[in-house]
Length: 320
Image (cartoon, rainbow, N blue to C red; front, side, top):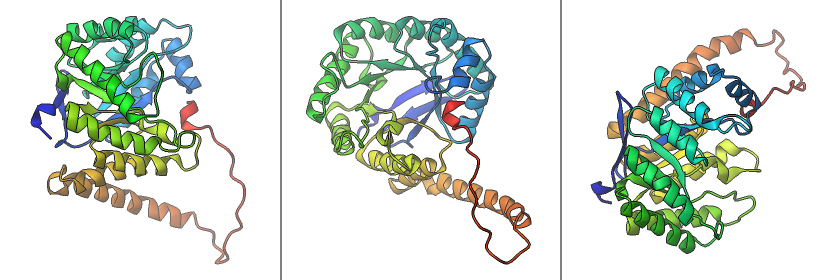
């Protein structure tokens, strides 16, 4: 595990590092209108209040970077991306990951961004590589290379490795150093693809040991369609970190996930003096002590156990 694998990202006031001997990088996934009707409607109307709140909440929860997606159907995505970048950089100083399949939106976001951004993403198709990589090189950004191409997503980790190597070599031909290429090994739903987790862990090890690149994935994909997604996501991300993964796009508001990441960092020696683990434990204890009197005051006067009653359904956070 060479220090030559270390990758940096920056805003005007902050630089973070990613690498095999660095703490795991949490990239907050929440600023994405896909599946969030209220967020999509507000962004389309030029209202970025929820974007600001999501940015601040994720950073407060421990996100080191924020993924920014402005893919609202029928809206002007390049304009929305640029405005989202400006709005977020006005309220927080963490680096950003600009997320779009539209090259014009990536170009617009990079033009508005101050610092060294991460571009999400490029796949292994020649046409896509030739469109995105010059843009990444022009702005001195880093890029996520997704390990699929025109043949689709292979279940064979060896086939995905071949695509990853092609992306890395093509990026180098455009003057993008290997340190600025992250590979997404593709987290597929284990409910549909039985060995998706095992294949990803195998591929992450090869990407680290043979290509010498950092890795990133959309971690929540692994649990799609299954119950107790936060619990499954937490176990997955801790195993992925042990295999060598250095970052993930994930929801930092899930306490199980945060705890798993902090634990993995401590166990791998990436948390000096276990400082983050201790701080997080103290924060949890403090929150519990504050909540305890409220819970006591709300308890029924009778010593008999209350009968359970149906709770009203509330809107999912993903729909807002």
